[in-house]
Image (cartoon, rainbow, N blue to C red; front, side, top):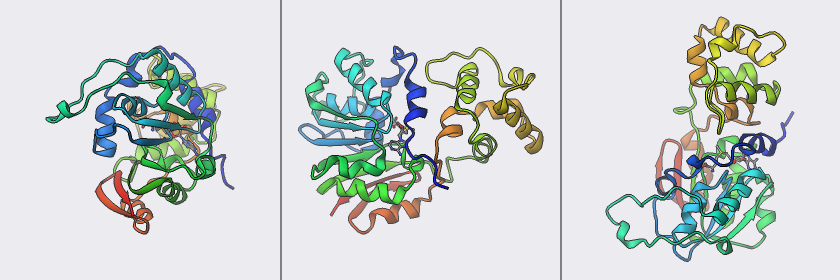
Length: 287
Ligand SMILES: C[S@@+](CC[C@H](N)C(=O)[O-])C[C@H]1O[C@@H](n2cnc3c(N)ncnc32)[C@H](O)[C@@H]1O
């Protein structure tokens, strides 16, 4: 049976707390560059698909682009808007030999259009005939119900000659222990996973106050702790090994595909020319 595709509730829960931490913006230029391979964005129309809290969208605004920021969550794009209005990103310079070419601007809310709370399955309807010079989707393709359809939609939303970039998990970055944690905990209450990951310091904005080993001492009435204890016993992991790879998002996101690079490349071959790829990342030019 298909699961609820939107991760609205999950990500609203992840980001709906402790909004004041400055970490959200750290490394934003480097992350943007790693994904799309350029800083040359002045005057370009950019669509950040599944933008999350939008650190890359913020960097694109600083680089002079007009940015549309989409996400299934409501909190993520809203936080981006608040950050743009208060201009509270940690100051950062562009790295690289040619940074002199790129003048940074103050991000301006006039150049930002938000599309919050929209499942990716409705993305092309939402944007209608609008087309973008750059469309990117960072670290999210593995979380959507139909990655092939998402890739097709990204290409439909790009102007001919425009740049499309996606990054995602694949078999090299989704370890066996992450898959095992997920198998044992998927479908268990979200608030339990939220509380456990907050206590061990693996949830956005929370400091560590306990170790998983301590928490596993008393699993009474907590299905998630009981499942993690069973996982340790049945698969022979130590609590420390599980704690290291225990992430709220991996446990609760409705989809966590182990995407194959050749399969993802195949999504782009018909309408675009692939210009760069490495495990977990593809850039293409729309034909
Ligand atoms: C791992 S986060 C990546 C956030 C951001 N792109 C980044 O690189 O930091 C995955 C994002 O995908 C969004 N997402 C997952 N499934 C979605 C769906 N079906 N429709 C829309 N957004 C979705 C989540 O809300 C979340 O913001």
